[in-house]
Length: 155
Ligand SMILES: CC(C)(COP(=O)(O)OP(=O)(O)OC[C@H]1O[C@@H](n2cnc3c(N)ncnc32)[C@H](O)[C@@H]1OP(=O)(O)O)[C@@H](O)C(=O)NCCC(=O)NCCS
Image 1 (tube, rainbow, N blue to C red):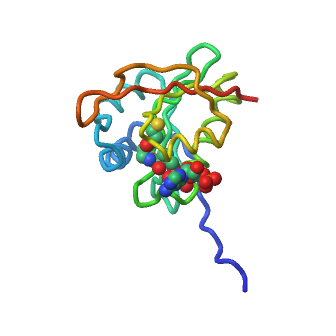
Image 2 (cartoon, protein in one colour):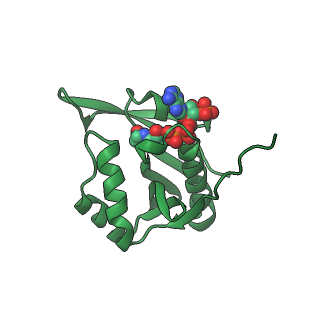
């Protein structure tokens, strides 16, 4: 029996008109989401917004800030209804490739909550290693939470 064919997923660049879709996923995915204003400011500051679409529907996005020869991954989010299907891994690999080829970045940096086991597993599986700790970085339900700073070189 043949496997069910997968619907194609397109890699896209997200523009300002797409931000309501990003904001809707962001609000569902996080206890402390970026606001629509945060997203607009980030885009207008020149950060690269990448996305994955299937049948025109946004599944995931990544926001990358170039800093000299480093790419800072500011946000990586998959629609909660589609998490655990390999989409986050694909979005991260796409971000790494675009950062290396279009931004000429030699490394990628990101921050992650120590409590975010799924994200930590994704990052460590793709070769990110801890290089630092930012204390009390994130808002949390009770007070604040540290951020782990992870990095990996880009080919
Ligand atoms: C974190 C996130 C981007 C991962 O994307 P995803 O599509 O759910 O993950 P994938 O299906 O691509 O899985 C990638 C890896 O994550 C880990 N993972 C995924 N689901 C998991 C689960 N339920 N439990 C434990 N690890 C899991 C695994 O290591 C997996 O790799 P493997 O399949 O080789 O084992 C996504 O879950 C998300 O948007 N979460 C909310 C927002 C967030 O936390 N963003 C990251 C902020 S730093």
